[in-house]
Image 1 (cartoon, rainbow, N blue to C red):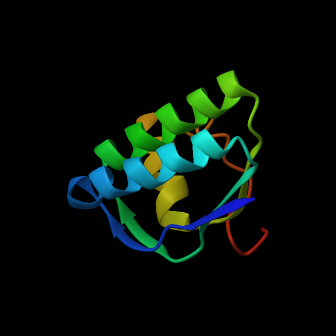
Image 2: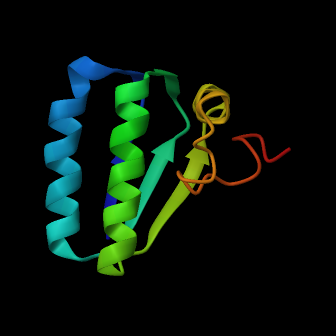
Length: 96
């Protein structure tokens, strides 16, 4: 199983590196866990990358799960209308 911790600020400056790492995870054909507990900010390019990753994982039959989602990720995804595409849980990190 591949695990990814998304933390701090995730914007266009970090998308290229994350794309490579996510692509490697897809090539392994193993389940993937994403942890965005400590993600403090995310921009549209990073959201777009995550949506594309989840779509490709679905096409390949790879299970992807969120261990936790920060309020910032949830708010940005909802603002862009991507919370369903990102398969985000219906609750944030506090479980409320």
